[in-house]
Image 1 (cartoon, rainbow, N blue to C red):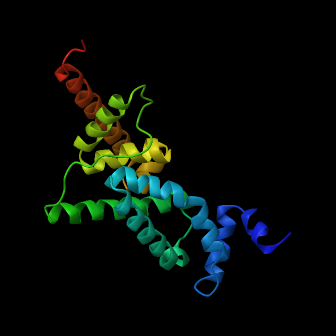
Image 2 (cartoon, rainbow, N blue to C red; image 1 turned 180 degrees about the horizontal axis):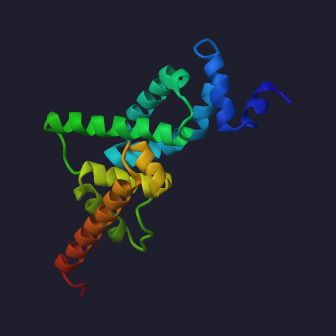
Length: 191
């Protein structure tokens, strides 16, 4: 087997250990880690900030931060939890900067939604409802449904207690349902 296929056969923990030894002069292990996780990091960023260009920039920023911080990763949490924590914070920072610059407007999201929808109109309505949520609520829903983290992993990624993460998630879902039901009541009847 060649070196490239060998590195693809080892798990994340071993890659982290190898990357800690290799960085900054060799990058094979780091590049493999990023190859494995880049799509989900990008999906989280896209769902959170709403714009593909911004999501790409934030994903690159996260990967650069991981490059510089990987040697300090203790392994107390799962690698994915650590990665999504960095990405979540970068997304929230981006949204705060955008809001301070008074450019913030309700973003439209691309890709999969919280639930499976039958029509394009349902997807648009769900996108608009997600955009109406507060940043933290939108982030928690995206971590749960876009990235697939458990509520415990979300709590760890956002540095909050498990009970607080559960409460925030369920309240965010209630708000989302309320927004969606308001939209249904306000919609004109189909003739």
